[in-house]
Image (cartoon, rainbow, N blue to C red; front, side, top):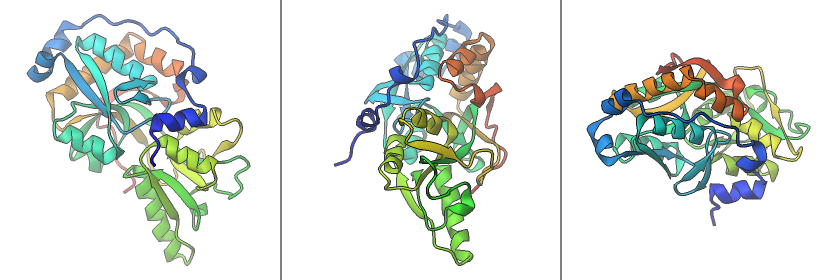
Length: 295
């Protein structure tokens, strides 16, 4: 029987309260100009629904079908106050469910952050607000000696299903076979907690994923895990992540200007520092910042 991401988080001993004290985040006043620019349907409903595909700590820590904690929860709360509409949360299975839900109009946005890549920009827009790095989460002592992509041949590598890391590791598997080495055993999971649990239980040799959530999990893993492959490209160029909105939507520009306001008044910095994400901050939010990506 499949465990929920929340149940797995509890099994791992992870919670928002363990990681961070309740640092004060500035309360926002409604910006009438931004509110008035929202699409009419959103103004009439008085709310938006932000979709996610399970916990992605420390950004998204899903506590139930419509409850979320983490840096992205703080960001969505501040944006909600600024725009004068509620932002509710919904969880679906897998990144494909997130993107298709936005394209179908069932959900208005995904606070994310979600990886911004040119191929994804063809269908949706990204309001980028963080930069990320992709590394390996491995067992303490790195017994499989995984220090980069070239070390993954024949290894069991956990990744998020349909994510960019899965694309990179499958490409590396092809390179392994072409060089006469064993293929990578790619293990796809629909949420971060399941992936990290696979490494802790030794069903996977490593979890190839974003450095920010891996750092969060490792801090809470009682010395069982460590990071590997830091300081390398690992198949990626510059990685930007952000909020997903429908392609060419009126909402996108409103969210971008809302984020600019939260940057300027110090709220963005306060949220990122609260969740120890200082190293992932970018100087200003932007639309579709990714210019190149691993395929």
